[in-house]
Length: 64
Image (tube, rainbow, N blue to C red; front, side, top):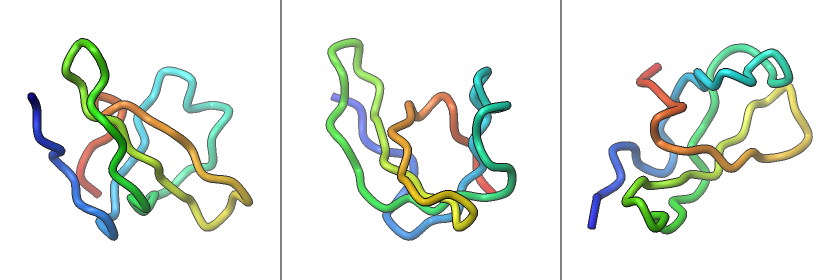
């Protein structure tokens, strides 16, 4: 089972292909979510410019 690369409270950059629908800048990891069936960790992240949180795959994130 894979471990999460990022920790709660860490600042990350959201690099999704669908990023044009997301706010720019850095996001804060607010929760670690379970690893999916293919072994990829997921996260709940928040950007201060948005009123909601996003669920993202680890591959969509990079260090801020």
